[in-house]
Amino acid sequence: MQTVITFYRFFLLVICISITSSLEESHFKKIRSGVPADLDNPQHLQIQNVFGLTTCAILCSNVSCQQFQYSDTSRFCITRQAEAVSGGVINPGSGLFDTYKQDPTTCSEIREDNPGAQSGEYHIIPSAPQFRGMSVKVFCLMNDTHQLEYVTLPNENIGNFPKRSNAYCNSEVPYLRFDGVGQDGVTMYQKIRIIPSTMAVVTEDTTFTSGNKTKPHKYGMAVDCYSSTKACKGIGTFHIDTLGTGMKFATELMWTGYGHAGDLRSITRTQDGAIIDLVCGGWCGGCVPIGDMVLYPNSQDIQP
Image 1 (cartoon, rainbow, N blue to C red):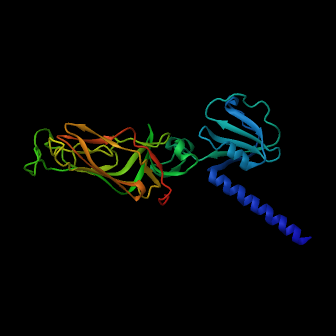
Image 2: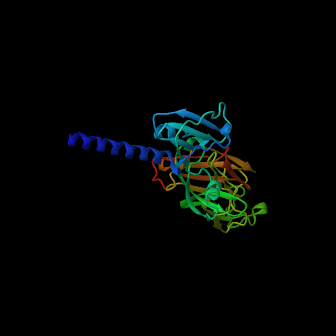
Image 3: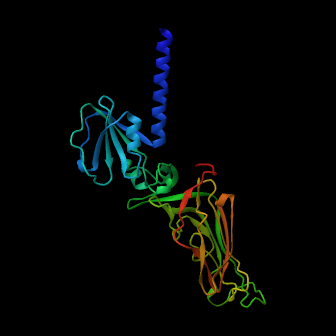
């Protein structure tokens, strides 16, 4: 008899651990315990009778559901959607409800939950489809008017516009001519701004850059003022390295030339695409990404 009791105790412990782990993987945390159902904005609520707490969490594990209520006594699950849904809550059932909230999806939500939150590193669950349910480490730039998301880059990401020219491929000189004068220099990115709903990089945001280029490179832009003909080499470069972030750009991401004689001379991808080296040039001209630079999970990388 004692053996049977011990077995059932062990079995219940395993179930409890399993439920806790499932909730952690779903990124839900309990914020209220044993209270009546919260029926504010009933048009945003849906109710179902479920097998258990984990099932309720699974029902709420989509980008439009950020909070759910669950009653252990009645096994009623009330999910709260961001947008109105058909067939809102009519009868919340009986019993007291625990309320669980999903981890924040933006830095704005972090500030809403904690008005005193300061700029720093946090984890969010982006609503971008490719990161569904995944935790991502971001730097939140907090101020009174807006809260912005950045990805900190552990390794060097740098664009170089060399101070050299060779207009007709016959005589290189250690200076720039015409429109190229004063355009040379390097831009180093420490952080890149992203949009959590798509995980696209805001390439023109140079908030966290350093270097000596008067007008900083946009992220991922390679440019020079070396030659007026595509028959000559290009020497403008940009080095991308997302290792250590748990993310990378799609292997399909490509670049196109712009400006006079702007042409992509080479693109090299290493470390399963997490490192990209561009060589591009023109007179003055270069290369920019085709479409948005969208980040994707990198399963081969060490997660932050």
